[in-house]
Length: 339
Length: 244
Image (cartoon, rainbow over all chains, first blue to last red; front, top):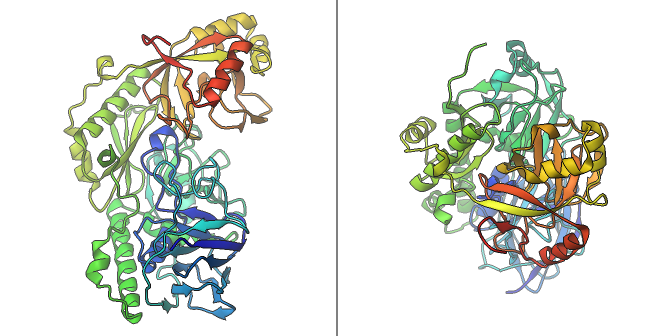
């Protein structure tokens, strides 16, 4: 089919995101990609798409859409938002068939911040530097480098008919402190500063966005100033500028920076952090790299297992071997392999 | 104060490792970063996703399912690296730059603050050989080392809300070439018609980290004609030794 997803309404900051733009960090191009990488992955798997496929990232402003030119199957997952088809409530995650007259809508619920929609077969859009991800700051990727808005029509590749399925998202399995791996500039903070950071309670500031989550709370004391000679930045970096208030660098982070980084929020906890809202309180806890790795692998196993169960419930003919055969780590394309 | 032993291998989360060769801006430190970067590219180690060379360290982004950090550090320690000038692929770009008052918004202020004639500032800025130490902030946004000491000046007290793309900026002993319109506290001392980042063009990025850059002063009419050519997708900088 050569159908389109037609956006009837979209809140600000609704963007297209795939697994991220990889291989260009050395030229100053940030990776972008989804805020909640686990929910993004779930939506893609539910749609039967590759794990890094492009999906619509929906924020608190919600979205309404229709399909034009044919039917489409939509995988969806994320925060426990209100999902409706023609006004009828759907489960909070699943796969749904959209026909020509159907109207699909997502509205923010009581908690959570991000939600993902992945059309089976994917979008028929031209990647920029190998990626569909939108970088609003650089104005590249997605649909003309900008956020999606009412009136936009996104070309679809189309996919095979699939059984519908749905399940209710449970509350996140883990609560409690966000786990942090120290470094690379933990030596730029006084012992008292490090203690403050791990003992304090921090509130997510309203001045947070896809680039960085800013926190309000006790100031973390530096030991030798707050300027470093700039170095590389990866997802989850905890940058502490002159005012001592932590900023966790998220999906739209820049590729390098000149503030000392006390540590990194581990990848297993990034999705949970991403789903926080302004005013939510968090604490941080120090872990070692072995824990960070084990928790990441456990998070991946959980996604695979829960989806394998969902496919069984939906009567889909997808074995867990199929799910396990998919490389579920985002960005697993080696730059060396590309050249 | 204790001296730090370099290189240091530092975690940047469980999916990236920073190999740090120093904590200052220094061409010898940068040579070591580039040598490791090249050695890693040559070795094509499975599980290494991409590397980010900066002034004084190399960030190695890796797939934790395929690489374990202790093993990665061991692999890196055993790589053959030759951090000599000759191991660097030296490319020199001659980049047209216009220092006319309409484009060089802060040139007169910089000259006044430093007690130099405007012509002297232009001569200093355009005679220096710069090295691209790093890209960051925005696509193709180049951080240059090699600014003459006489041009060391602190940032503007009032940042400008918006300067256009392709500005030549200086502050804090560093030089920059911008690629996107942006607010900045750096001083605008000129503008180049060249695009260091141009999506419609091949190559998308004109120059690589480690390349050298010198500026060649052009007058405003020349700038305008080069600007038109650059806007049409033509590179207007040239490589030293290659006739234009």
